[in-house]
Image (cartoon, rainbow, N blue to C red; front, side):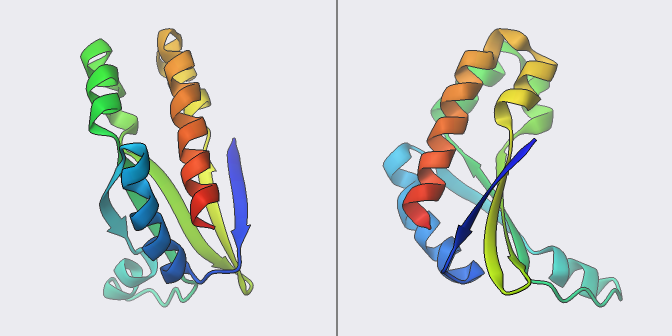
Length: 125
C-alpha cells in the first residue's frame, strides 16, 4: 500500500523544503537517488523527473535494529517525489505494512514512524 500527496512545488522545491523540515522531527536525509539520471548513464532515455529520498531517525533506527536486526532490509525509510504529467506527487510506502509483514511486534512503533513521516510530508508540501 502506498500513500500519495500532491504539491504545487517542483520536485526540487519539495526536496529543499523537506530538508528544512526533517530535523524538526529528529530525522535526517541520508541520500537522494535519481533514477532517471542513473538510467541515462546506462543508455536508457527515461525523462520523467523522479527522486527517491532515504530518510532516517537515528534514535528510531537504533530501537528497531536493536530489537530485530533483520529489519535493516527495509531501512532507511523512503519518500518518492516525481512529476506525474505536470503534477508533483510525493509517495510513501506503508511502513506499518512492511514492518507488520516482517515483525508484528513492532507494528505500534511503525505506526508512529509512519505518522511522523506523513507529518514531515505535510509540513513540506
